[in-house]
Amino acid sequence: MILHTLIDYDVLRVIWWLLLGVLLIGFAVMDGFDLGTDILLPFVAQTDLERRVVINAIGPTWEGNQVWLILGGGAIFAAWPPLYAVSFSGFYLAMFAILFALILRPVGFKYRSKREGSMWRTAWDWALFVGGLVPALVMGVAVGNVLQGVPFHLNGDLRIFYDGTTLFELLNPYGLLCGLLSVAMVVMHGAGWLALKTQGNVDRRARAIGSYAALATLVLFVLGGLWLYFGVDGYRITSALVPDGPSNPLAKTVEIAPGAWFANYAAHPWMMAGPALGILGALASLILLRTRAEFTALLASTVSIFGIISTVGVSMFPFILPSTVDPRSSLTVWDASSSHLTLFIMLVCTVIFMPIIIAYTTWVYRVLWGKVDTAEIQRDNSHAY
Image (cartoon, helix red, strand yellow):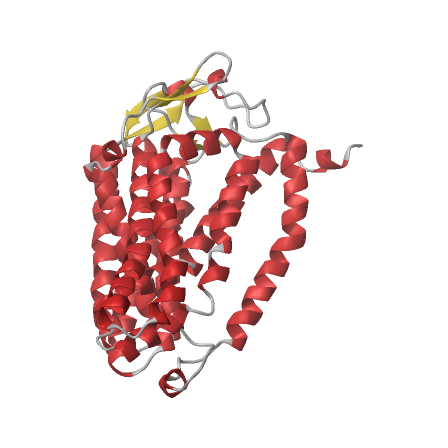
């Protein structure tokens, strides 16, 4: 027996759908507080020392946290090639904006303290703000557009054609709402991190702003759900499902129908745990930030992020990228994956290397645990930003 046949093709497809969700949630949680801290930087810190404290709260770990973004992109490329092809070509300008903003972050960290001038340092502080705001906003806008459907189609040879026009068509009302939700979510998470890592005025301001961000997350998430139910049509497969069939999106028929994104909740009520965690986590974060809790506030925002992102995934399942131009071309878990053997080899590599990554990350955070020491930063310390 060939080894990869030990796990059925349809099971492997679901496993990789779950793993993709884990990687996206991992990025949102691990790099989310970095992005949120960057956004908060100009507002929670008023003096140069306070801004150095904020920067050093994420300085030792932000590069490692971006590994989750690389892993997510790699998983999309290897496990779902058509998804990679459509998203990275159709959203090219949006991806470029994210890349440009992410490049500002390491440059800002490295160059900010190279000169003493206030104008120089303030300029880099705002560059770091942009480096946090733009990725969070654009990624949220992208998710909002995915929920509405993306203008692409496949021809008879399964060649992909993107039928969109400019970046500005992505900036539609629902997409912008999802973008604002994404920003509020990472600001809430970043505030929880700063509450854990800082003291004094920075801690106090972060808690105040973070509690408002938690309230905004709660309101925008509920509003986005209501808008999705009443104002955005969903997709559903009307032909027979072939979970272990060949990767050919054109082999199915799809229709667009109001409320279709909520069908999974009616069929599987346990999926309501996703939106429930999104709401309860944000509410708990609001309360805990106000009551001066530290680790639990960060944990609550983590739960909220998990709930919000998983809500998108379970609402759309089995769709991963619907098409507004030709619904039949929509990509699903069952017809847009790599081969059975490819998914199996990738799973073996993941089983080997993912625990190593998690163990190393855990060790790093254990070593670097504790609040940023203001006195240490004030000394001539080459290890601090």
